[in-house]
Amino acid sequence: MKQVNKKRYLKLALLYAVLSSAVLSSEAQAIAIRDIPNLTSVTFWERTGGSSPTPYTFGINSSQLTNQLNNPLGIGNNDFSGVVGREFYDVYYSNADGTFNLDGEFLTISRIFDATSPAGGGLNLAEIGLNFTGEPSEFGNFVASFTALGDNAFPSTVENAIDGNLLTHTTMGNTVGQIDRLHLTLGFQSSSESPPAESVPEPVSLFGLIAVFGFSAMLRRR
Image (cartoon, rainbow, N blue to C red):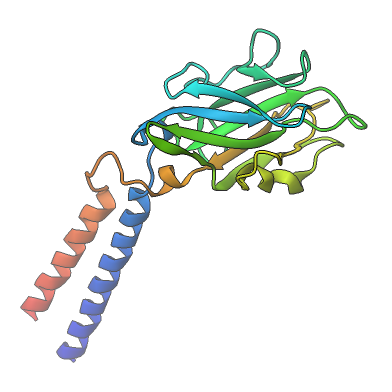
């Protein structure tokens, strides 16, 4: 009976160690966008008419990226505009759900647009590019969240923001009669897979080690 208990406790200890290691590995992959090595600026490629998108580039510590603007967006309160006098954008570091976070692993672009169908929908994003010193730019590789509203929204175009093609773009609709803004939040390989800035283990890892050592001591006593 004692031998059976030893095997059981050993399996539990090993399982806990593996699970704790997996959690730590997942957490260690995250890094704030602005802490990515050699990153210098971010470019938002927005399409308003014409045959190609317009680039809007901001330094990693610029006021545009490090602040979320209060409502309402408008003339004198925007990071850049699309349709003159009608479409105003706000861009910033964020969490996956689009809420502002200075040390977020994601980038969010939000906007208001006051034109309904038959006018085309707004928030026409081609790509978001991370610009590095001496390295190629990196486009977003997944959509973390988005908001599409109104009668001229086409949610199926969301994937255009991560297809690597500057000649395709999203169409997220309008905000007429709405409280919420339209928004897109993108994730990047560099921020989701880079090593963490700090190597101090989380409390769960310490607890995991204590648990493993505790099980080992118990086995030795049996």
